[in-house]
Image (tube, rainbow, N blue to C red; front, side):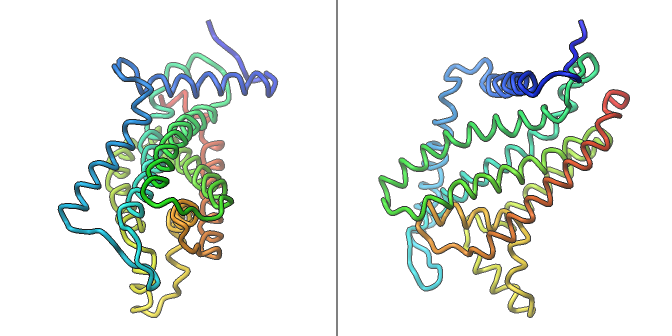
Length: 270
């Protein structure tokens, strides 16, 4: 039977989107003994692993702008935030190609597939943030303005959706995308201030007489700064976040444009 959603109402499309999000969440933990609880156990494992790592290296504190702070909360916040982007980055590869049967047999807005994937990962990320909140409340109960949290979430989700659209579309027509993404993801991780402050990148640019705002063209730099402004109470670079948020929106617009211009050919190629 062929389903058709091409002329349906927004309510019916929202119901379909919810079905796809729930499906993606269930697939992640299919045949797993602990199932859904891995959403909470994974960040706990991350915290334990990096605590041991920091202990072996003897890293207890670090410094930003002359202020000494605990390195572990800084690192853990960066790792957990990065995982949301990295997971969407990798899952996007199969958002379309992994649903080829559905695309060939059913008529519905193809945009719902990568959108559902990002929203499912966002749901898991929110659960992970609960673990991060508990960890930080126990280790250093000093949070910054709460307004930075929704701003960071919106900017990162826009970035993740834009990347998902670009990657999912590219992987339909160019299957080497998977190999490129593996290298690009690792490079992007090390170019993002996850385990070092953005000031190190600014110092590097200054050595070559380059403007410091260039570091925020990497959207994750400003987004990470916004998360740390709330979770760690570190002084945010509001101008830098604005640049990173603008880049995230540009990535989303580019992803939408490419996806909408290409989705009509998905069925033929797949």
